[in-house]
Image (tube, rainbow, N blue to C red; front, side, top):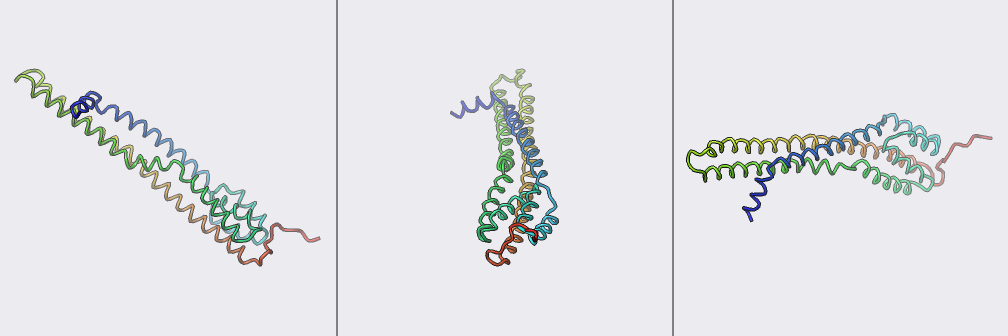
Length: 227
């Protein structure tokens, strides 16, 4: 069995591992670009948004809801869910925001598992190519030992060994080149997610504080002009 596996590895070489890594890297770059665009589209000035949320809440729930709907941020989407249930009380608003936050977290973390998995396993895939190259080098040495002394095959053996070792080292290098950007991008996006969740917590606390400070049943839904 081991000889059969050895023949397959030596016959195929480590080239196919390079193509696998190339394909994985293309998918990785596509995900990085898509996620970068996604997070860019959610940009908003959270300090200004928090101040305007406080101001609009003093006017009415409807005013605050319009302001949150105008923001592209994930934080505003969560607060909007709470504002939609504000007329039912603070507890209902809190539950609505918890559900909206779970949905937003899924959107923020979409496809990042691929980057994490690739970053953790790409070096091992490259190492597999390295192992194949080393097996090929030893196979070349073994074939040269079987040849008669002074034969041309013995003269070519060092070249075959060096070629297999070089291919093996390239496989390791390719694995690292694929893994490092994936790990760096995944860590950066995870940091953005943590910041988004922290900002969401701050905004939801502003809404809940307002709702709990109002007497029960006295939450202004919309401003009504005086007759």
